[in-house]
Length: 348
Ligand code: PXL
Image 1: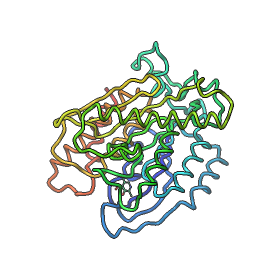
Image 2 (image 1 turned 180 degrees about the horizontal axis):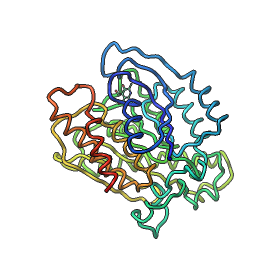
Image 3 (image 1 turned 30 degrees about the vertical axis):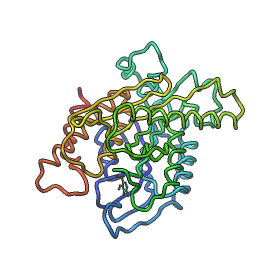
């Protein structure tokens, strides 16, 4: 069975972070290990929430996991409460981002299809490979984040929405999050997060060209970070290796009537997208649902394009069912009611 470790908070009430990731990824047939970073009474859109910081527990948990020789097919981070937590996640990436055991390794086809120029993603998705880009890992020092013979590093930079940071965050946190994103294989920022991490003024109305430029800016930051790491390691000249990975803009749209995801394949310099019908509402927590579903689909060996299609369709169904429920809670969507639909999508 595939195994994902997800590192984010528990908001006891609020339908986000671990209370969403754990049920969704488990329902997708994947073992879900959790590393809670904080316990909040609710998510931060409520007022008066309690916050117990668990940062000091992270090194001990990681040390025990190492002692037990646990390996993971993917490391998936969501909401992180401080710069120190980001730094600890970077250590976790180094400690657990390296090769999972061959029996439990994630389908590299899922995310490294782009590096195999003559293979179609649909054919690749049936294979069981590691997240390996042979062109890179043969030449790369194993301790740099550019080497990809590793568990999938999946980062949802959950820190902002609708043009504003969540309560408690400052702009320098966004810069630190950008440095974590530069170490990831797949990132799933929304428009606000992408703007904050690239220093781009946020715009509510934008076109696809603006969104594409944002994704290219994030890719440039990753290239820059990768080449700095290589220079520091001095093992190979920076020009010998180019980074791979995917940047997925969530909640993206081309027109007023659609909503979905726009992806950028860094190695191939290629965009891909999938949009559904936009519903006339906005609910909290949909980014966490999209991220959990995408990483789960990747762990099941689906291609990145299929994964985002399933995640967009599932998120859309969650919103549709929530709209229909006159009794719905304001703070999150009815993702539970849409789980049978998610399983049907996975069967197709
Ligand atoms: O949905 C992202 C999220 C996760 N965790 C906490 C949050 C939020 C968004 O507000 O407050 C604690």
